[in-house]
Image (cartoon, rainbow, N blue to C red; front, side, top):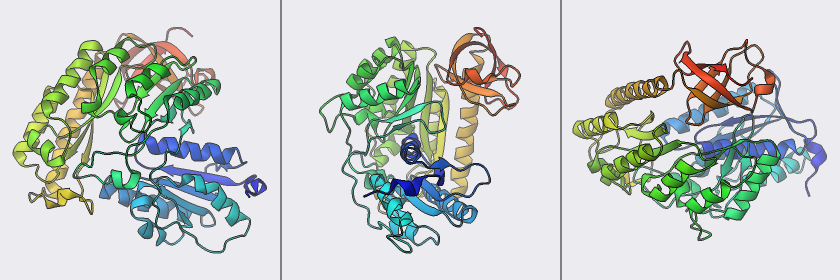
Length: 444
């Protein structure tokens, strides 16, 4: 039995690392605790509970998770500290050994949180307690929340069946699984009732939607497009082999799906793609990019690319660079390969030095910056519809166009009522740090 009175007036802080799926699940934590009377701690306030939702995609991610955990323990010494997510799932004992951590929950045990907190605050347990061997990664835990963002994040899928040679995510998240289209449509309707206007579809491998229910991702997109009140949808990430021409054509003509795609490439070398056990070659990837651009010429396309993986010779990296340089993509998400225990990539003999990884990352990040600036520059002088996000009083307001150009409205023109509103603007020149285009309101 949960003693809800124990939650009244408690303060919480949340830290999220990693993907949009984690942000979605953290937002669900916050919403769940808020309904029980827990409030988010303000700046400088001491929290009663700290929740850290972790990532484990690389060794660097693991290190960042440990840093965040230690920092929150120092800042909130009396707080009940909960660590969850992929790092907690894969390295539960390691996380549990950190002095100050009170509870470790795996990727799919988040529903246990409220009961654990209730027991702890009711004095039913003493000292630390852990779920150190978290194994439940077979069921689907729904999540559709906004948190402190304008956009909602709707979890449509979890897990992955691909087992790429460098990746531990299937061990942390389990096999691909999903809820029904009907349940997701109802969650989208609820978001609309709460005033939401934009939803990001999240998951581990969302193009694989349907393994559990026998449905298709394209059918999910079509059903969500009919939900009244939601003006925009974005698809967080789609594997190129699961991005169908039917889906591209539908998004191009849809009411609410934005011309914005994020597609993992990982390598532009066919030799490396084979070593990674990816499910496509560079020609298929290029064909998908060109199909998007043919159907939606102004589409923003983000691309994940890994550098320095085992087997990536200098020639293979040069192939990747040249391939990406020639593609009409808008931004690169670049991350260096790191060794993950238990992965089959460790059997590949060719190892790239840390120095070479840094040099290769720098080259691709410079290429990304040039491509993003070129994409933004093409929109200067145009009118666009922007969904604005709440800004601190006296600060510039930001938002995104339908094709994900970041926009900045100066503080003098920003108004509180613009928050979560679609406004027509004229796009001007770059702001001071070239992270957005300046805007002036056309219809307000």
